[in-house]
Amino acid sequence: SQWIRCDELVWAGHSDWTIPTIDELQTLIDFAPDNFPVDATLFPNLVDPNGTSALVWSRSPYPDSSTQFFSYSFASGYVGYHTQTADIGVLCVRDATTESRCFDLVTSDIAAHNIIVDHTAGIMWQEGNWGMNNNTWGLSNPHNGIYPSPITSPCNDTCGGYDDWRLPTLSELVGLTIYGAESHAWPEIFGTVNYGDTFWTSTRKAGSVSSYWVVDFTDGDVKTQQNDNQAKVKCVRP
Image 1: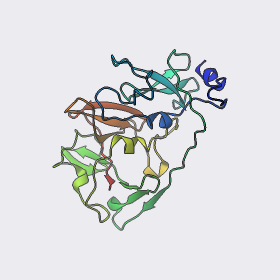
Image 2: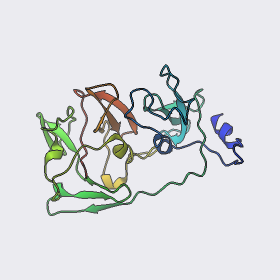
Image 3: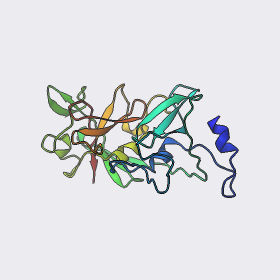
Image 4: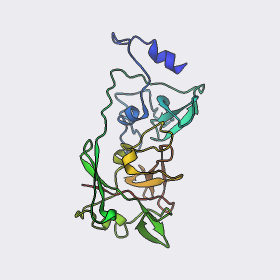
């Protein structure tokens, strides 16, 4: 199995290799280039010149499953999952250290102005999620909305005394993802995740003028969709 291939590997004098987590794999990705999201000089075997997808395993388990694990495509940047017996690639890692995320909730007299301070990333998040109802963005509105333009973005509103809120980048939003969580795919301080809670990012798909990356916090799915599709908004600053 892919687990044995890493566990039994002796490479460069080290024998403590293992399967990386999804978070570790995503640190190798650059979502900006049109052809090679990963540095092809350092990792020449992950994506071939024809753009063939290089799927690799992670050790991050899919929620409520003992046989399915998340996988990662270095050609597209997509996160998926497969049954453990699937024949896909593996990229081994060693000496991985995981830094615990540190968050604080800063409350206000107006609940809608509560802020979550992300000390690890050095940014702030609005506690509330923006949804759409009757074509209007609002906190805790139940429905998803189309991609917000610079004029219509709910992040333009002042919150917690700050007026420089914006849509998060894909890297910032993915940084909140907890892969393998049974009931939520982001830290508990951010509240309950409902089925289909997908959020827009400001990161546009390479080579496209109308497709953007989104993160589904139901299960941690990362994908792109057209700007006339629907998702929610989580504002960040600075």
